[in-house]
Image 1 (cartoon, rainbow, N blue to C red):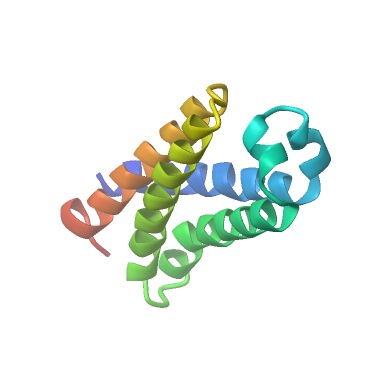
Image 2: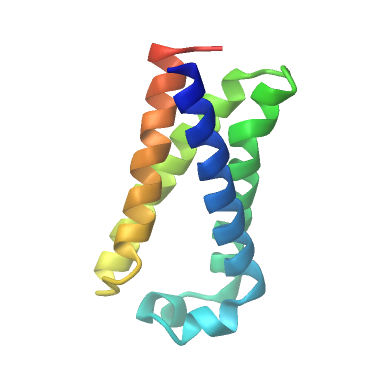
Amino acid sequence: MNILLWVLQVGTAFFYIAGGSYKITHFEQLKKMGASMRALPKAFWACVGAFEALAGAGLVLPAALHIFPVLSATAAACLAVESVLVVGLFLSYRDFAPVPYAAGGGLVAAFIAYGRFALAPF
């Protein structure tokens, strides 16, 4: 179980770091894709992107460096909650295309949080 969780943590970290960085650096391209991107200000999406990138790093670094490894599980739980909020935001603007992307990442993050808090804690 520990190996599976590590593989999921590293993959999910890459997923969120890449996605968060993309939201910050390529906002103009994202604006063309959905109503929610056009309706909300760039600063909002930059904050969401920064949160995703930092929490993505938090999935791996604390545990890998053995510095407060519980922060990795906490980062996973925060990403799961953030995904629920973002999916709700997308649905409220009828942006259905990014919903599977956000929901899938959130489900994996929720499994990591459950795994690290209950199944195979550090």
